Image (cartoon, rainbow, N blue to C red; front, top):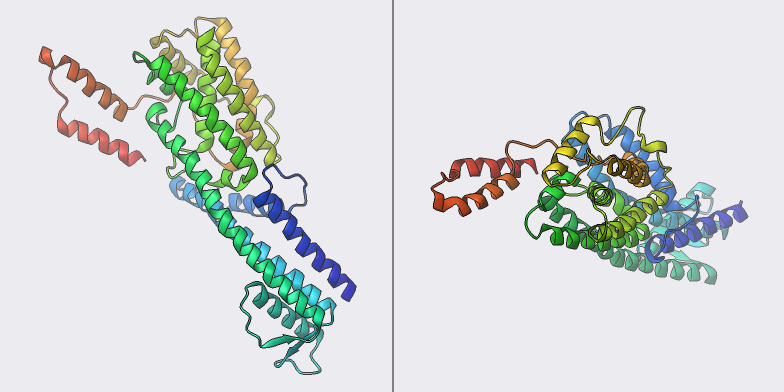
Length: 402
């Protein structure tokens, strides 16, 4: 029994050490199916989905999904601590529980002695140092000192880990929030192109795609090193890092499909980087892509109604899609390169993907600002200005949407 306890203790302590090293320190995607972190997420995320998906209220359901990321971080750290306590307690037990415990009598049974070992291990890892249970051998004293050092090291890792994690989350969300004004909320490729149809908008869109090329590279680096960030959701229910990434991929796909030559060069670069990030993040969670881009029979991200709206928007921007069979064929070919991966990741994380072209709302902040700008230019012609009440209603409606 003592030999088995010693081996079990080694498995616990070495397993936690390797898992913490791969999760916090190692700057690359860890491999292996038996990692503690991977087993933890597999065993907790699916039950969390099963429970949360039964909630009918969409806002409450999304709020509960958003709790999982921060809560899982706390539970993972707690799991590491408990395994370390158990591992060192097993070491002590394999040595015959070499402690002087005033509570236990000379005839204490095995479970009572193991309970004392757990108590010593817990107080030592937490560096409490109560001194009510004393080690009676030099080896036991060495193990107590070693466990205290491990406890301090664990606290140091956590203190260094949390700021890095939340800084990466903050950098990610800044770009997602900025996309709201440029592509709507939730973002769509059609709206992004429409809002860059002004004079000089071509250069602004090229600069935006260059920014998102770098953003995709940062996501690839940070979220593969810290996969737990993928579970962290945005502050607004109609925004997410995944929907923003797919909206950018949709935009790049459209520009590559309908625009030839130099103007689509940046779109190609951004597309390759964004697709790389999308696919590698799917590999982190061992997600297989959906064949043919189908989430379920008959599902299509670009149904006929959305395709018609997309044609109308692109037609207003002098970009031919419906009237050019070659462009439509190129678009379908490009979609097949990333949509299966996006659908699989969206289904796993329960994050909805954006549509290609959203229906125009009657009250829209962008329309209000555009109209106010037009009125400023037409003021000399005596045009009636938009009333303050109407403007306030539109802005209030848009704020309420968030």
